Image 1 (cartoon, rainbow, N blue to C red):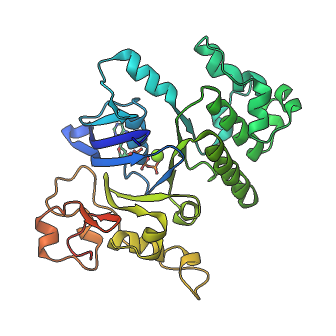
Image 2: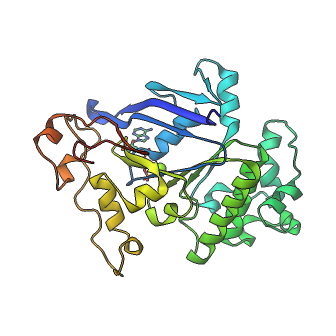
Length: 310
Ligand SMILES: Nc1ncnc2c1ncn2[C@@H]1O[C@H](COP(=O)(O)OP(=O)(O)OP(=O)(O)O)[C@@H](O)[C@H]1O
Ligand SMILES: [Mg+2]
């Protein structure tokens, strides 16, 4: 079966003040199948949102290709780009910012269809049902809802256009811990019901490890480790993944409370570099790491960009 979406060799840079060039995404390939959750984890600024925007054809890549259901989408074909944009919906961290205070829940959920002058196969009442909200909520305004209810409205609105891929960019980060699990469970139910592909973006490995099928760990624009979620979490191969895992107390048996966070600062994304981008922070770096950029290597089901991983 061909994946819903396949990204191949995507790259994106930005010209910034002072004539420098910033590398936001550098040679990233990944695929997501229907019903699959691919989690993208990495520090702020590593390129997660830029990658998601290229997948949705909202940002044109400098290099590489985006394919949907096995078909490469040309940036030049406006109708194809528009279709991809409708097939991808985003759910962001802050539902209050995503909803207009002047629209009722019902107006918000039906807004994407109104804008495209389309009728969906599902009514607003059905969509509210899908996300576990009572139909009577349709008359309310966002300020009259809790954070968790607002995020459910955002999800209902995202489903109105019957997308194939949901980009979930820190979807529970702004919610109370008690509500986070409910929203994650709802997303899992919706995925099973509609066969949705999820690109789940998060800083927090603990959040993604329980819901992801695959995990990609991103560092300065590249995926440095990728594999089935269980493998990545239990036997991380890349020193950066190991550092991330060690910083999550729940993953370290017998340990509670504060653990050392990831140490050091990432290299600047505007720096020209030879070798491995992580070498400056890596306890295991040797001369080859400074001289030669590590290629992507397959180790069983896992792919790693590290000279020393085995
Ligand atoms: N339009 C732009 N112009 C210039 N630089 C940009 C632009 N968009 C992103 N960048 C830069 O590209 C890099 C990647 O940004 P991106 O937003 O993709 O990171 P991110 O992983 O989503 O971070 P966060 O976790 O903070 O959301 C950053 O260094 C950012 O400053
Ligand atoms: Mg982002």
